[in-house]
Each structure stands twice: as structure tokens, then as C-alpha cells.
Length: 488
Image 1 (cartoon, helix red, strand yellow):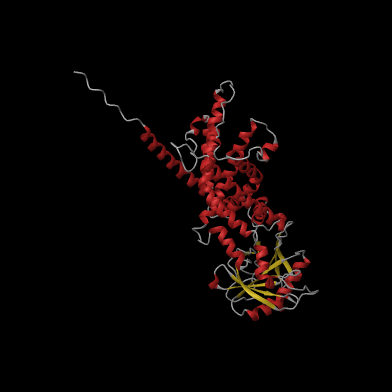
Image 2 (cartoon, rainbow, N blue to C red):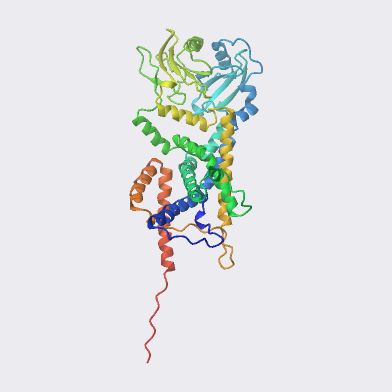
């Protein structure tokens, strides 16, 4: 995926060949030139943001191991027993160690995992206090301030990757990077394919670098392009999944899901005779009140009913705000094959009042959920982490090789020496067929509307490029020559 193919002049004159037809010349200098210019400037301007995203994402892939390193004594038990203590006893132990706040939810310990008893407190905002309890002894192992189940280390690295700890302002960086990553990937693939198709259209030439080139830009370009081909699909997936929960593009995606009736189904938790309510989402709803109006001892009844209705594996039990609502039980197994079914349970009548199975979700909602889990390295366990780390390292290499090509293309003659290579020539779009322009402009406009952090920077660049072009055109115009005086 070279950013400077347009400047790759052969060392010697090529053999004579028939002059290109008008259509062939238009295709080479129009579309090809436009792709080179777009890939060049996108690489130069967007690559620093992608580099930051790749480094922070690489760090985030190691969060499961870091959690075990820092908090292993709280997250797991040394010896898993045969029978767990009643859930009510575990909750009572957690309440004894943490008398403040409202009981929000309980993530039931499974195998060697501790039970997590979550308390909400107004002063913590979106965060909570989580008390970790040994399910086999009801011993409290410790307390952490968490963010929807994430430990402090994972939360810190997540914020670093999403917004560089700059809040809403920092989210512009990650959305900008995700909005342009797919442009770089697809543009690079197109350039590399166009370059190789005329020589020897074998897969090996597309997938492997040219090892016959011992040095120089040709060797750098081979590694840059071949690596880009190998990671292109992964980069497209990361770009798409990252945009689904970005600030502006993510909002448009949510609106599209709503319009298509493709959102995750809501789970009705209102009991007969109670106030209507919708709940069940771990991140949704208003949470519990200052004091729960339900008996936490009912958690054992809820757990038993959930198990009887095939809610197996790790589950989270959400405490209702009052007795007019059912308890919500959610499977939280995000490893493939995922188990994400939910049920609303009334412990007073030992009945399931509502249920939502993952297999019944709309396809787009399923794909969105699975994509997010894959993006976070959870879907396929350690294999997912290794793949994400490889993608991050591959992207870093592609970026470094791209800048190296820019430097290798610099003019070195004494009369025109420069620090970096010359940018591609402007005006290639004017050589495109009118039909391509008529179709391309509305498509780009639509994409820019859906992805504002793509559309706004693109519009700004086009305006700036026109201004610079006009200024240079005026500067390069020859000065008018005064007429010679008439001879006397």
C-alpha cells in the first residue's frame, strides 16, 4: 500500500509501446492519481492518530493478564470448593464489609471466580464499589472501585485508548482515527493491486514483499504493502466496530438500528399491578434507589429459578428498585459461543415473567454485540488477544514504513534537496469520467454525513487545498513583460 507510487520512475527508459488510448490514459492518470493523492495525504495526516490508537490498543489487549497480576487475590480463589455458600450469606458478608450504598447487582462466582457484589453510590457517578467474596467460604477478599465490572487497571487503559484521559474532547481522536482507517486500508489495497496486475498477477506478488529488492524504497514499499494486505480485513473490522460506539458515528448507527427495528430487545420487568418499566440492561436503566425495597435474601430463589430455566454459566443478578419490578438475570459469558440470554424473575411467585434469548435478537444487534466483544479481545479468549496484538503491531509497522518511504523519496540533488518526498500532483479528479464524478460525489457526501469525523476533515482539506492551489498558481504566473521603448 504505497503512498508514493506516483513518483516511482524507472531507472531506464522503457521499451517503446503503442500510445495509450484515451480511456486507458484516463484510468491511469485519473483514478490512479486520485488514489495516490488520497492515500498519501491520509497516511501523512491520519497516521499519527492511528499510531496512538495502535499503541494504546496494544496495551489494552493485555488487560486480562494485568487484572490477574494486580487483582488476582480478589478476582479468584485459591481452591474451588464443592458447594457454594447461599448467595444471601455472601451478600450479607459483602454488606458487612461495605455498609454504604445501594445494592445494585451480584455477579455469581463460577468455578474459581469470586462472587462480585456491586454497590452504587451517587458520588461515584458511573462507577461502583465492587466487593469480592469467596463463594465457598463467604470470606470477603477485597473491594475495588469498578466501572461496569472493569477493574481500575482495565478502566484506566480503556480510557487511554478511547479518549486519552481527556474526556469528551479526547473522543474526537479515536473517532477520527476509526473514521479514516478504512479509507487507508481500502485505498492501499487498490493501489497495490493496480501496481501488481500489469506485471504478474499471482497471489504471491500481492501477499509477499519483493525480497529481490535489497534496499531502497522498492524494498520498503514491498514490506509496507504486503503487511497491509495481510492485516487489511482486521483493520476494516476494527474500524467498523470502533465506530459503532463512537460519539457521532455511533449515534448515527444507533439511530439506524432504531429505524430498522434492529436494536437489542428490551426486557420487561414490570410485575402485574406495578408501574410499567423496562430494564435488564447492565449499562441501561437508572440503577437502584438509595435504599432497596426488596429482600436480598430472595437472591437464592432467583438463582435457583434461573438455573432451572437453563441460564447456565456466569450470570449477573440485577436487584430491582422496588417490589413492583422483577429481578433481572443476565448471562455474562462473552466467549464464543456466547451465552447472553436474559430473564425477568419474580421470586414471590417463582416464575419467569419475561425472557430474551440472544438467538432471538435482530441480526444487526447480534453482529454489533459480537463485533464489540471481538474488538475488546473477549470473543475468542487468548486467541482474540493474540490476533489484536498482531494487528496493532502490523499497523505500527505499516505506519513506520509509510513514513520511511516518504523520507526515501526526498529529492537529494544539491539544487533541489528536501527533507521529505514531494506530494502527489493535484487535479487528478478532473481527469475522471463524468459518470464517476456524478456517482462519487453523492456517495462521498453520504459517507461524510454518516461519519462526521470523516466528512468534516475532508471538506476542510479540500477547501485548504483549493486555496493553496490558487495561491501557488498566482505565484507561478510569469510577470508581465513591459514593451520595449520605441526606437528614436
